Length: 190
Image (cartoon, rainbow, N blue to C red; front, side, top):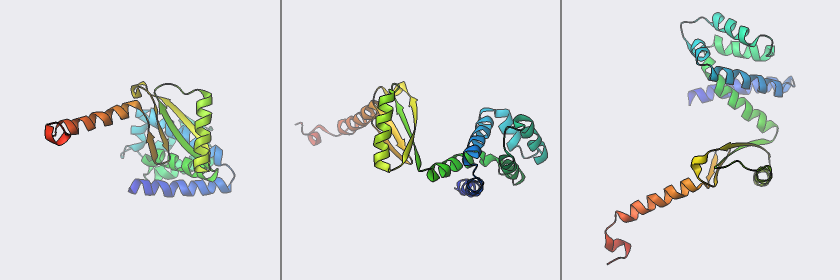
């Protein structure tokens, strides 16, 4: 919880500055690139989070990787995280910053996981339904997971709706286990 609260404070401060300077989209994109690069490169992650490596060395490594591809605002923000030994919060800060930016744009992210890829028409219908329900513009992220067998799972904010066949079968299996462990007389068979 402490990391989440700290990440929120850092993201909020950066968000307010980016909004004031009218560079919200740019900062969001740069933070995402930084967080993805660090998350995908285990050696870089270890280097940034190693307590015995000096802050200046960490900054030099990041500067050599990103060069002039990130703005001064993003660079100084990440350097601030490094100076305060909070670089491990980068991914959480990035997600929180994106959430704040989406909120300011009246956008809500929805994630749909389905057994097969949704058609563009199905995605559009789903976006329209979510937009009517939430009153916000919808950014839909689609993912295919064949283990669902059929149906889909939908996550909008912190709400999850699971209409997958896998989950339905699992619930039926659990109900059968409950009823089959009861003595015959309790289930109505004499």
